[in-house]
Length: 260
Image 1: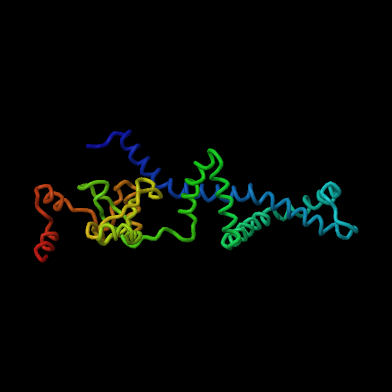
Image 2: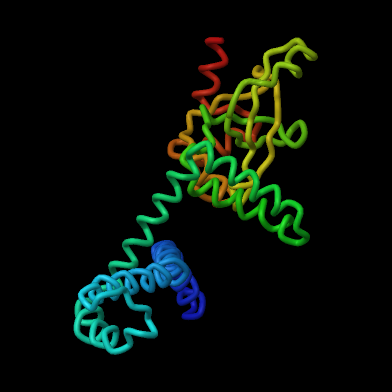
């Protein structure tokens, strides 16, 4: 039976939208970042560069000139050199160089001490102290040099027995917990849908986890899509689904259990 025009239009419209949005949103984010750098850093660098150029060109007049005393020179410079040669791009590139230099500074001992002092001040400010940690968490996840390291993908019974969640092993269990329980533990990060930046960190017995033959990227795509995008090789066939519904294990699992 043929679909109605409305259903057909809606199906293909959303399919086209799903294919179009990821590259467009990525491009929009990149353009936004570039505009942010240009407007908030590049514009000030541009003024500084113009001042330097005016000073250099006015050295032959005996003494450096201020902007107020060099209106004619600057008008000529802007009309004949700066705008025709599109030297605003120079300040845009210099802004990236300054960000790089700032990053080098923040990696130093003095820079880290300066950042701690700034963050202590921020955490004392009302309203700002509620917003800053969330923003920092997202930017650290996206831009930090040292990403959260996952070793493998596992399935764990969380948040209760009988409910299985996909988790990412981050480390062994804390010594204090392992000594208290007297068992081998692992730390697992259980990402939330549809934003895997957030989630829950749990400590669980190693023997209560199931190692999954799934890559980290496939596990994150599975989480982001709410389970719609199944990892490669993990989709059950119709025959296996019917066997499970009738209480029968798929043949591969029967063979595995018989050999065990």
